[in-house]
Length: 172
Image 1: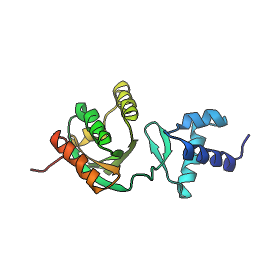
Image 2: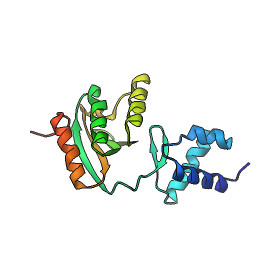
Image 3: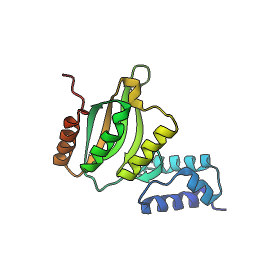
């Protein structure tokens, strides 16, 4: 059996090499420990400064290839969520998170880390099959996304495409 330090080292190595998120359940099975032990290991790695983020389908290292990060405000129905996400990714963006301003709790943020259509399909499938609710449903569809992309020009293109689709929020 591995020590905690050895296990965390192997988790870090696998996450650095991974092309897609790795779930806590996968690590738990591999190292023959509980899922909660892995969650604790990830928390310790993050607390020590590792750039690990949690997505809906596992853990991954932040993609450092994208050099521009910006926020967009959107408003749409739950049925338009897939179109919104696909427009962002199709135009070179990565959807890092979603944030809503809740009247009781303040800002609530959910990590998404969606970088391609396969991840979007899995996210939408999970949303529909688990009969879950989107954070944006708490705020009549108004929400923010942190978007990562190559540069400000690409970010402007993403906003333009969302505006044309009627998804980008405007107070007007």
